Image 1 (tube, rainbow, N blue to C red):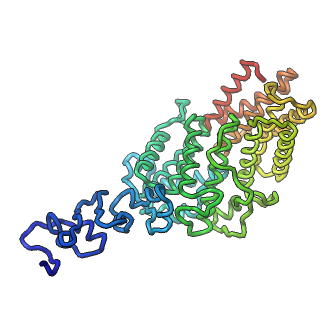
Image 2 (cartoon, rainbow, N blue to C red):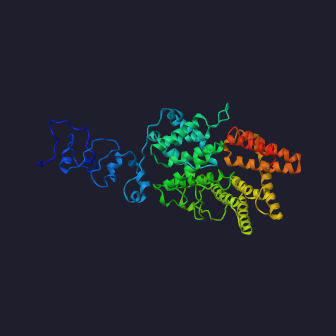
Image 3 (cartoon, rainbow, N blue to C red):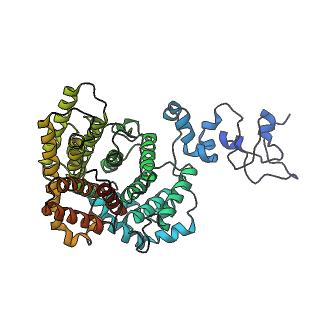
Length: 493
């Protein structure tokens, strides 16, 4: 009987230890066709380095060595989805697996200097109204040479460059080569099983691009994918189930902002078609709102800065927190106007409460009250429209009309102030600003049809001119103009 395990002389040896010995951290003789230990224990002896690992012992696929050898199990993703309890109680973790970055993607992104240039542009424009990427973490951690070899971060860089890019002048098609490259690389990263918070951020930027350029149904579907991706990562209003725990308050705040961004986009993408089911659940009163934007950018976030959705309204709240609150209310408005109410009194009381809350939020008078204005028009439009299915008291109808007109007049008074420089500053105009201008245009089309006033017509032309200017930046503005033409042709205002 063999008393010791020693390398065999005069025979061919494998170039590596077998999977069974590696799993048990035992010295392998590398004998062919089987090493000495596997022969003695009657174990399967496997020298392959692919995902086909040794199954010599029960549960060995959960071991550290097995996780290292199997690409998908190496990330722990299959364990997470098949039975999360095993994932939580074992030591399997999702690792930073990556894939080779295609040469054309590397060429588009450029070197560190190029990344700094378009990142600076991103933070000066998109970040001002959709602040979902930590500026401090980006510059402190994402620009190291090792980061540029990661596919998930490269995808994020690519999508940051995408969202700040202008549509090609010679075509009205926003599905540019850069957009197609981002969509394709996103698919490749997803197919490779890379499961990362940065992939979620990249997906949000793609969704925002599609929304801003009216690329449908992709925008609607992409936002839904982001919501499911966030749930899979454990990122939601209740962040207790996150797959990987954040190390700092700044990182936790970044995840919270990403979740609120999903809420905002998910509600906004349905504003033209109330009644669609949301992909992300309604925020809860105890959900934390985004903290001060400047403090977060500077990495000065602390737990004491937080406020919840039910906190009293204050001018000290961050602009993004107000947008988040408005988006939550917009979701309630869309459900309200699409509900098949059997009790008109109760339904009306609910509408009155929403109206009061939206007006209270507007009194904060910060620049990002565009969503509140859009929500107000969306709330009262069914009562103004002759197509409403409700039996409305004349006083209620008059109030609804007055609110829609007041909001539209506010928009109409604001647009001319910015119109001369709008072309130069169009990159700082949010996507929801486009819809608000469109809503105000619809109201003025109705007023002009009812009163046939040259004043209303001039205001309408100014609003339409604003959309033409913004069409250079966001192609959705041009699509809104086409919809307005349809209103005019059909005479349904």
